[in-house]
Length: 220
Image 1: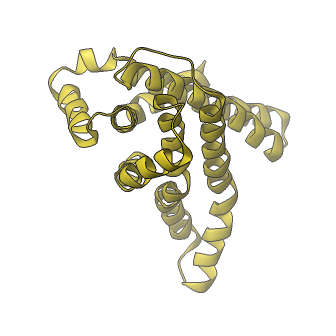
Image 2 (image 1 turned 60 degrees about the horizontal axis):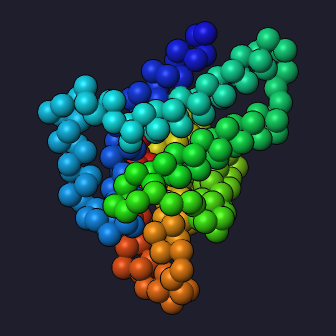
């Protein structure tokens, strides 16, 4: 119970900003405006918070992060009770939970915020979102000890400072790698019959602002 409560609480702190970002990205991919959507969510958050926390955007993101944190907390408790770590199994379990919930959330956001009638998600969109999660989670799980060790040895930072810098910077640094996959999934949903050239043109037009927006998202 404690693992679930702490996970739900932590997710509630992260979900407001992340939901505003993800809603804006989905809105723009569907033909809407990115920044007006984002600032509209922030305004709703400040002026009508009760309505905001009941909105689909907040609830889906809260479930995504709550489920991921709960999986991590539960596995950590299991390791503590067992008296031995299982890093590979833990990483696999967290990835499976996070990726499944993320694609469930993206499916809902695409259908709700595209501006058109809901339609089935094309398999290539799911594949693109899965690649986003593989790259993103791979960097988050694999890179921190490597980068922190380099900062400690080559820049003279203390171990604690190096680890804090990595935890702050990596979630944002990975966004240029994962943003194209995130955006591509939404573009393929909104224009499933578009040519590669048309998708590439839309990607070039939107990718810069989406990457900036997802860097904001990476901050929590």
